[in-house]
Image (cartoon, each protein chain N blue to C red):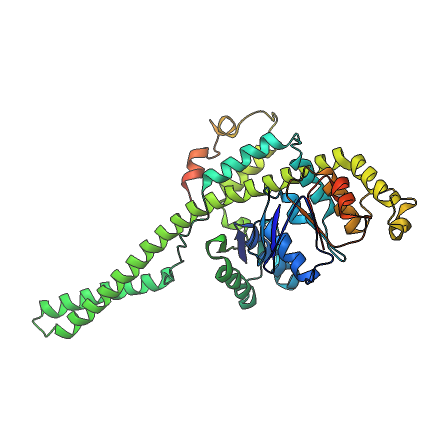
Length: 111
Length: 279
């Protein structure tokens, strides 16, 4: 999908107009951003906006998040932490002395 | 005021041009523009116009009017404050400190996909191996060497482009951070301005309704239809609203009037408490 983010009132208005006119190509709308279908038509609209508003329009390609792309230990840690007994325990404390990865090691590893 | 129209000069707090041979619509607009300090074929010497003039300073049949916005301007012209003013001033000064829109427009350089670079990198390694093998066995390596040079140059170009792309991305991020902040502030300012406007309108609503009533009672029989059962004082024709707003506003620059709502121009000027040009 194409993530289009706007950085000025004029660009935001243009994005709204595009979204309104081409609902079929819009996956999701946010305040000043929208996810467009990754089709040539979606790209065409994104490029149009960029041609009109320059740096006030940012376009990024976004991939769907697939849970299985994430190592199992990370998924397990997330589930375990959400099921913790004491809500006030920070993750660092929760993970120490267990097999769960530390916040540092999580930060250092790309997925 | 001193007013010059079509080479003729008029003076006084009330200028009546009804018996002067001029184009009412065209010259009315030109005089109103001159009063606001805009480009105009007419000349006028008068105190500076207030923002109310831009909205209601030219009262004519068929005019449009954002009555609430104009009424809020009228309140401002009288020096009224609102609870939003302090924060609005802070937001505006922060916006001003952010500076004008940057003219810098880093264009996203078109970069080859990583796969392309990897392919060229492999090609360079392969050619390097071939050159070494040929040289080791004393065979002619000149052709392979020239291919290696080309591939190495291509790889270096791709690397340079990639570095430039990364730099551009970082630069764009910085610029966009600033724009994001500006957009937040602009939205905040717009909300505060709306609040301020609402507060001013609220404060002046009764006064506005009274001015509208007084206009409708004081002659102007054609407006009588609006008189009954009016819950919303803003549900009124633009001419009446504009006159009521001008009465409320502190107006020092002349008002241009081309409608018959008063018996005499002097009566209009007195009711509006403003200098007047009547066409």
